[in-house]
Image (tube, rainbow, N blue to C red; front, side):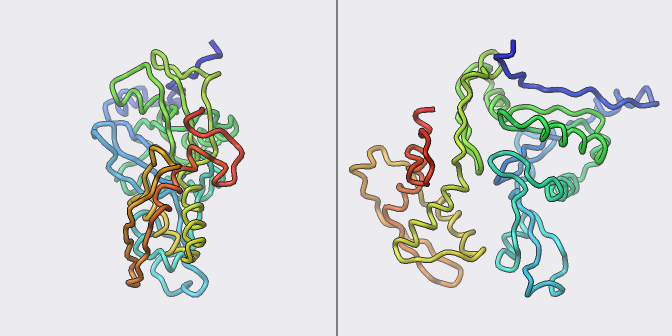
Length: 290
């Protein structure tokens, strides 16, 4: 039925003159890559959890550092080490790949960091619901033609998350860096008409957090400062049970330059935007109404 989303959108293996090639790669563990707007998670199917987790970002030396750094492009842990010296780009927006050239650099880094040759392993990729068809076709083209993977499977993140919990029926709320959605799943299939999407997620909360800090008298605008805004959100924020009565206990966040930032109501007002998107300038229902 067209009302259901196939959790496993499989694509046939590439043809090969070697009849034994299919059996050969089927005996090897598959590569799994979960591409998110903010974080990429990768590993082999034999592992119980992702072995490589890194930001979905590409860093290049800022103008005043060009020619003074050892590389022209940086990924993973190198981004945090040199964050103040790099201009960062994000290839994905709201769960969708917008810059395939930059995304290819990240995939190159992913395969290299895993120490695998993509043409020797089956590949499982994730995608959000309603991923545009041209986008998916481009991914398929690159994986088969550029990386020459022998077989490819593209599955919806929410379905895989539920299957990972040992369940085939349930309701998934997935809120990442670029998109939030709810998906009812029955017997391993997502029920298409009831998938609800909200284009408000972690990255929008970063922007709101910086705005709240600015209103409190602390300006956080540089790349390094924005990095710490995200860290504050992740380490210090929480959801208030009753926002009208909430009064947060203050916490102090220390910056590398020894400045101290005291966080109070920003701690709950930032994530509250998930329930009241108007706080982040978006006219939409919150996650509790999806």
